[in-house]
Length: 225
Ligand code: 3PG
Image (cartoon, rainbow, N blue to C red; front, side, top):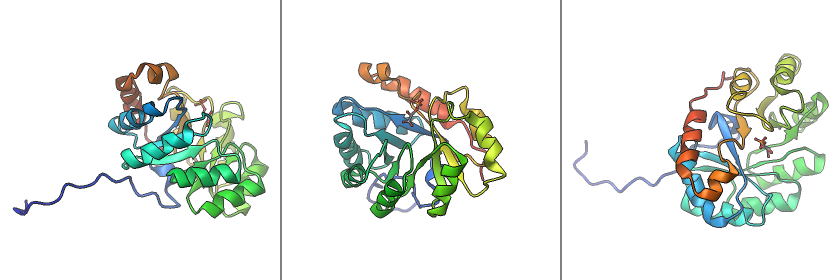
């Protein structure tokens, strides 16, 4: 050990290269924040549970403000914006501090808008033709949404061989019980879900419960590419 005193290390988020968005955590917490004051303790609870990533959905009036405060106060978390539907939202989310974007669908316009932000993104797909269209745009990582309603793990397993270039973060209706069946697939890097951050736990400020849910999810291991 060095005898010279070193400055305390500033916490920093794991590297988020364009090819690694699906490999940061096995379960991506999909989060709705109704009160901006919940944002920082919620993010810290996820980090404490071993899940240093968050997809904060743009579905509440305070979402952009919540992204901004998490970006400045919890820099060690990989922070993304979800439910991105248009170019304006994509730009505002990145300006607020989002380091990746997630959309429920993928039109040519939305793909172009998210590409132009310069941050990694997961466009939503639910059919083979949509997957191929996203691949044609040069993007190989995508969301599969709504996962359970669109065919679940059986669907993704069926397209792994015919469309091997695509890797997925399935999201929508996934639970702690069903997550392992997705994570066992070769074309799944991580799954997304809101079960880690129940609205009643957020409302009650029960951060220990969220940390415990995160810790259980963090222990799930993807099969790898
Ligand atoms: C999403 O925004 O990706 C989904 O609504 C999350 O799905 P879940 O709430 O069923 O986990």
